[in-house]
Image (cartoon, rainbow, N blue to C red; front, top):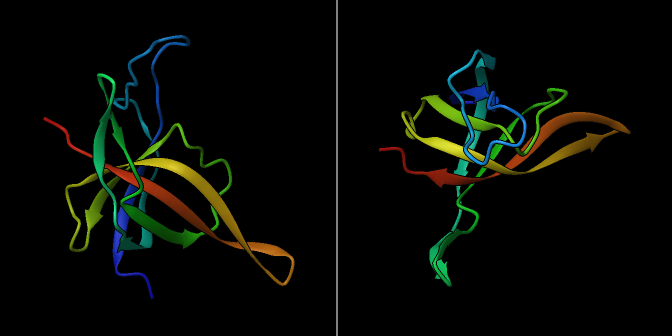
Length: 110
């Protein structure tokens, strides 16, 4: 069912630091998922680059996934890409959270 795989990375920067640091231990590795590309764009608002939604990632429910985390795609056609989580949506079936739908923005890493 899921053909892609990701590693969920958590921000390990000191509290109050404006720059995220994902060099610490991964929150979870080798998570099977489905990544769907969506339309998205980047534009400047003043002097700030503003990115919009580019991918939807669907996976089995995992507690404590937050928008401050990011995904590193380890398998599938998007392998090697970083996706910043913008929104976490648990999908309920029969009154129980069965899946997570993560709305993400692709990040270019130099």
